[in-house]
Structures are given as structure tokens and as C-alpha cells.
Image 1 (cartoon, rainbow, N blue to C red):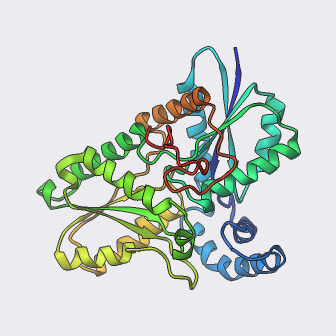
Image 2 (tube, rainbow, N blue to C red):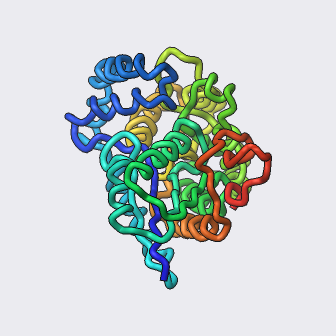
Length: 348
């Protein structure tokens, strides 16, 4: 019997209003987020956090004073443990990038567990240097400091993994069935993803390319209900130019066309401020003002059975293939290495 540690990576979120500013300071101090020399980041990160904190505290106050992300990720961890099963002893650990339990804390827990194998599983279906790349880099450093030497396999991305796609499709169908729209064909499905600065993509980040593949796979699975669909981006902050089209622009177009929208979070797998506040409150209000006939927000995949089944398959495939993406991140087809080989996981 092998002892297998599965490390689930996610962004993290403040556990109380007092945690908002230090959470933001950690975020803005990450070189994957703020591209500046370390000395400048040590000054700039806390300064940006102080400026952003009042607005962010209002956001978290509107959903109870904290982020639900940790509790929801822990639910996913427990569901995955139950699903993996088999003869091996599998335990899932949560490593948050910018708030507790931080990567260093997760590494210490994994070291105490003393596994025979480790699978690194980011809860970001599409790869970006700002999310998965940053998380894997942080793990490499934390694991070295913790003295972890067990064979380690990493999943880089799974934009078209069948369980993820099926879960999204089921949720879209259910949301549409509960709506007020008279005919399924009149819907416009807006696949909303967290945005990125254009310069990040220009540097080779494959994220929008993979988001497009996810949306296309889901739309094809849904069929007629998603005849009219588009990918758009949300959560823009700062003065840099970000990739588009923006969700605001697509809501304005839908209002002008007089079509209802099904807003589907395509890059988020758990509810958090970007879904519960931005999508459920702010963009909904914008849609009403823009004359969108109906605005329906599709839930995230969470612990739905197809999604957890898909994660379990990814764990098994990573172990079978002995995948290692700890170096050479950034290749466009699949950020595994620089050889150009096709990733056996990304198309799972």
C-alpha cells in the first residue's frame, strides 16, 4: 500500500476582515503578479495593499466578512479522498497561495504524513503563470525547505478534462431549466474567466488559449442551448490594458441585442468573491441597467460528482505517467517542458 499525498492549490482568501490587507500584501508581493525587482515589490506590495484594502473589505463584508474559499476547497479535498479509493492510502492537503494555510504550512503537513508519492493538483483548470505557475514555484521552494524527497508528480492543467466539462454542462442545463426564458435557443452563454494583463499573454502565457478550449468543449457538450456563446473576462484591476472582451462589454451587447444571458464561471471551480460579489451582485446590477432581459448565473463546479471524478482521474494519470512540470513552465500547447510534446493530461 502506497501513501499518496495530493496537494490542492488555490488562491486563498481572508478569513476575517482584519486579514484583508495582509492577504493583499502577499498577493501584490508575488513576482508572478507584480513584475518588479524584489526590493521594489517589498515597498510596492504593502502600498498597493493599503490602497486596495478599503474596497476589498467592503467586498468581503458583503459576503459575511470572510472568504468561503478555504471551507469549499477543504470540502473538495475530502470528496477527492473518498473518490480516489483503491488500495493506497490517499490524503488531500490544501495549499493556499496568499493566505492560510499557506504553501509552507501545507508542505509541513505533507512532510509529517511522510508519503511515498506526491501529486500536485492546482484547482485552476487552465494554466497561467500567475496562478498554477506561481503555486508550483512556491511548492518547490517550500518542499525543499521542509526536506520533502518523495517522488512528486504535477498536473499542469485540464482545460478539456471530461469530468470538468460534463460538470459545467450539467450546471448550465440546470440553470437554464430553472429560468424564465421561454425558448432555450434565445440564450447567450457568457463564459466568464478572470482576466489577465495583455503583456502577460504577450510574454507567452497560454491561459486565454486554454480558456477558449474549455468554453468550446462545454458549448459542444451542451449542444443547442449554447448555440450562441462567447468567452469574456472579469475582475480587471490597475491601469494596465487587459485581455478582452470584458464581461461589461458583452453584457452591453446582450442588452442591445435583447437576449438573456447565462453567465458561466469557466475558470473558477469554487465560489468566492469574484462569483458571489462580482457576478451575483455587481454584474447583475449592470445587466439590469443595460437592458439585459434576464441574467442567470451558473454555479461553479464545486464538489459535483463529474468534477471530483475528473480530479480523481487526473491523480491516477499523473501517477501513471510520472508527470513533472516543475521546470520549463510556459510552453503554449501545454506548459510541461520545451520539447513541444503534447500533454497527456490537458486533453484528459
